[in-house]
Length: 297
Image (cartoon, rainbow, N blue to C red; front, side, top):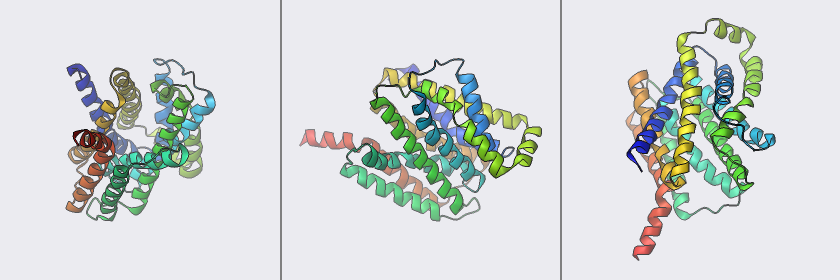
């Protein structure tokens, strides 16, 4: 990878890692569903100025946006509002890779390799350590459960993206941006019904620069800029070379949460983190290692 593109890759990982701190700051002034609606409204209105409308049929916009944009972030934002620390959320959400593997087996009839089964159980064991850990910044059962629901929703979005590609359409940043017109509708309806008009009015009337900065970061930084640059890298290098870079996101997420939010990590949580990262690495590189062993033998 060229030096310039390597710097871009590092920049993306940092943007996506710090994204969880921005979510935590945003939730201080906005309820989760309202924040989700405002985020994607900003993504759609700004992104549509820079990215052309995809040739994907609208029904597939909905099939993609509902799980990966609405459900994922409705669960994630709610999880962080109800007791999931930002740093651990950045790691636990990576369970989407394991959920994607399982859903691909059921919905796309893809086979699962032995090393992927091992990766699943190792990472699941690590998540169990994290879920059962207790300290001053303890996660709640509700927060952890909602984060796992967010990871599963992300995985369903990945299945939709693969289905879109299998039908000859592009599931790139253009789809991410234009399908962002879909999630504000269920977000705002959910916010009105669950969070209530009084909380919505209070949040909007007391809208601060911190809230605006968090929304701007989530929409323009993490979504438009992050996915735009990610799409650029995927056009220049093999997906197998680019995809593993996302494993750096929880490293940045954990570090930035510790530095900016004062979150601490217990020894039990560290053990869980190591197991999860090992499981993700095995899932990503296990096939490559297996092929090298086969060739050497």
